[in-house]
Image 1 (cartoon, rainbow, N blue to C red):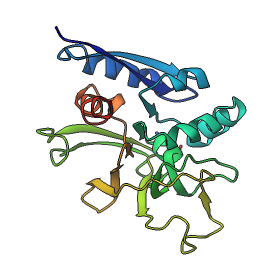
Image 2 (image 1 turned 90 degrees about the horizontal axis):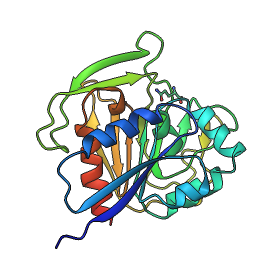
Image 3 (image 1 turned 180 degrees about the vertical axis):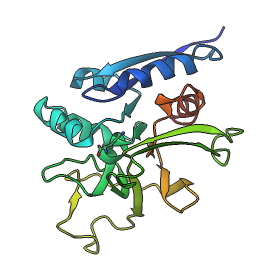
Image 4 (image 1 turned 30 degrees about the horizontal axis):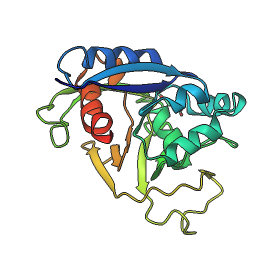
Length: 234
Ligand SMILES: NC(=O)CC[C@H](N)C(=O)O
């Protein structure tokens, strides 16, 4: 007799492309899991957050997500959730919110401080606000060598911070997370564009991507997140 484990994956639903993530997860898990049953939920409250075995922070506008989280009293629970080591994936604005330092941020913008990275908002400038490119992710997702990758006013990862308490990066232009969590896992660079810009990183149970797999019609990236982060964590 197989015992089926029920797993709940939340998508932070304060602003941005949360419905698209839920649809992709549903598509990615429709067939092929006999040991797990999945529930994908929109997260707007602490009670919903507590139920989640993993969380996705979608793309949208990081300053709005930060502001709404503060106004709805979800910022504290989210900072606490980051410390729990449960998997979190931030896409685009979600990557910004998940990071420790942000260049080009807005004064007062809050960061969850889940990954020891500095990111730059709107890093591609006006000429290249949005673009699509088929990228080869086969070095970390087996046989995915042609993923339709969409960038929209995307951030990039500008540095990996070795000592987040050090003073070398103190700069008034840079927003720093107020979370006292320190992710101790090594930061892995998963993908760099041909011009060297870093657009996907992993640090232990946390994943950050500059781009939007949920806006393509391809479920493989979401399936990989489920297989590599969610089902392995339980
Ligand atoms: N597509 C996106 O998520 C854009 C992110 C947006 N530029 C920000 O700063 O939050």
